[in-house]
Length: 229
View (cartoon, one colour):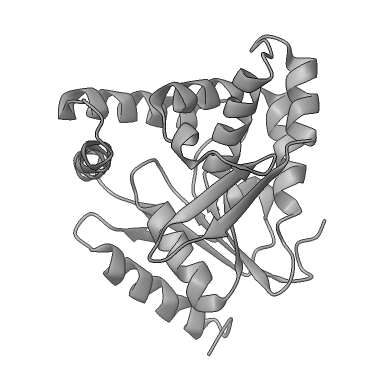
């Protein structure tokens, strides 16, 4: 396992907790590499669609996951561009149909095992900030710092609703709320890598915090652990 050769900071939590925004900001402050595992699954979902792979063909899905050509590029602010096979697919991975297909893929142990190995390849110098659902429990169990970010479902639904509106999507807050509830249930009840805090994770409720406040709080923890000065 690559973990241990470089510092890895994991950031887990449910959808809408702010992991992406916070994770990118922390990675920039540390000058670390960044891994958005959710985007990895959604990129696989895009690849499945583009290569016309049957969602029931687990053997081919595993092969596609192992050979997934994906990279991330940090942009100004807290943005992140995702590339699949050299093409910017940031718009595609934001689509609801992509998220729905990704949630199905995440249930397959064959896919999760393949992507776990793929995710560990991101742990290279000078270090890594990895956000997702099982970064601290399964993918990087030896991370130097494990964080678990959460918020009430009301807050998370409102955040997601605002994001979708800004993107121009025609959605309703109740619909977004229901989608988050279903996703929370799938994530926490699946038999493989369920969404749970690592036993040694530091938990932070961001319900009443701005993204900047969360970043500041987490950076204080990182400095306190001697990960950076």
